[in-house]
Amino acid sequence: MPADSASPRQASTVACASEKSVANGSGLVFKQATEPWEFQEISQLNYESFVEEVPQHPANDDRILVDQFHDENTYFICRRGEDLLGMICARDRRPFSLDQKLGRLENHLPQAEGARVCEIRLLAVRPGLRRTRVLPGLLTMMARYCQEGGYDYVVMSGRVAQQPLYRHIGFIPFGPVVGDDAAPYQPMYRPVGNVGVEFSGKFHENVAAPPGEPVILTPGPVAMPAAVVEAFRQPPLSHRSPEFRKLMLNVRQRLCDLTHASHCAVMVGSGTLANDVVAAQLSRLEAPGVIATAGEFGERLLDHADRMRLEYVPVQHRWGEPLDYKCIERALATQPGGWLWTVHCETSTGALVDLPRLKTLCNKYNTRLALDCISSIAATPVDLTGVWLASGASGKGFAAYPGLGLVFCEELPAPDASLPRYLDLGLHCRGGDDGAVPFTLSSNLLAALDAGLQRQADELLARIDEDGRWLRGQLRSLGLNLVAPERDSIGAVTTIALPRGAIDSEQMGHTLESLGYYTSYASGYLRERNWLQVCLMGEVGRPQLERLIPVLAAQMDAQSRSR
Image (cartoon, rainbow, N blue to C red; front, side, top):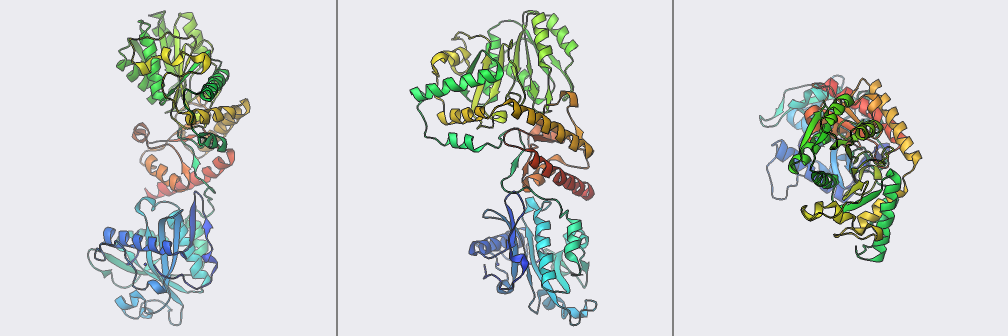
């Protein structure tokens, strides 16, 4: 968002409150530039903005552009760590660049004789961050600088294409357009007045971004507690060592205790691998089955089944629609003694199925029940008693690193040489009594999962459910439409169907990211439907959610008005 042409210099010696750095959430820092590396970054951003984006200056091999008045400029920047996100600078020494272009400015400005005037020399924000907190923060820093400096007017050359923005913040055009056809600029001015108060109203100054680290609100990866990170960092163990076997035995026992499962196999891979292993076991039954779907991950079960050449009847629902248990029962009645495979928590919608009801149906028709529990285990109470097979993964609710697939089973299967070795659940379960594993497995991932399991408690699951209900109520109060009905919703996953044409889910996701809130929006099935997800897996607390709501409301308002 360039404002004028372009650089490193010594810090300004002007003393003002704006020199203090202000942390504005998600690691964003607004401050006056003082460090040599900050000025180096400024000169690089100037080049990108005023050479590559706006062809105002010739290119050079160094990709550096230093402003002609650099030594007289005062720079304010927004950075995250050592990444410069945007900058703005001012200069109050005459003649200004506009003096050189238009002649004496007092001839164009009302009541300007004897007034104190400063010029905004440069304004640049990286392209992907121009609808975020970066620009309002920079303008607010500049507004305070102008007020504290006692200036009466601020002038600038604003890009012609950005006139609506500059008018919105009170700049008034004057004089003829300057520059050339490739980079036309409109001279503009505004009285300083109470500009700080005005900016506060325009830019939702009361909306606080989260302090410290970003808030991870995705279904994976998730924010991990310090104990999990520390466990992962321990020196690796050989997967054949006694220490490893002891760790594996401990993890398997904790997993079975958590889910009331009889056995659990742990393998290197994602939840997708775990579902492939389940499909391989279903293929051994040589019996037709039923697959019930109501979202993206249910549809993926169909793909797993097709690749394993399973014979089945699909019972497909609209995404987010509650399962039609009568329809499922009719399908089971046509082939008793078969199997039923479905998703316990449909991650794409946030809907949770009625597991006791599914168990009852399967018992009635002598049907084996298989479940995808990847997003439900460790996020809500899960009782796998009577469930033949279930899949899980080490990330998500466990608040551990992804990379381990889990398969829970009611009975230990024998190895089957007709299956690919890595898909043979019998191989993974063999040696389970002494913690042996058939293939190489990372002790670091296993130790992290063990640490994640140690945080599991009934109180944690109750808090996730309570926070999820609170969040959904707040979102509905903003007028948002939630995909899953309340009675079927899991606390850990909330999917929002944003209004098409008014709010774009991908743009909203990008904006929230820049403010420190990492939601789920980038998957193709979410973009296609204009859906945004807020997930409470990992280390997420109510205070973080309470800060999210006004930020989300402000961005909804900003997007709606801009459209």
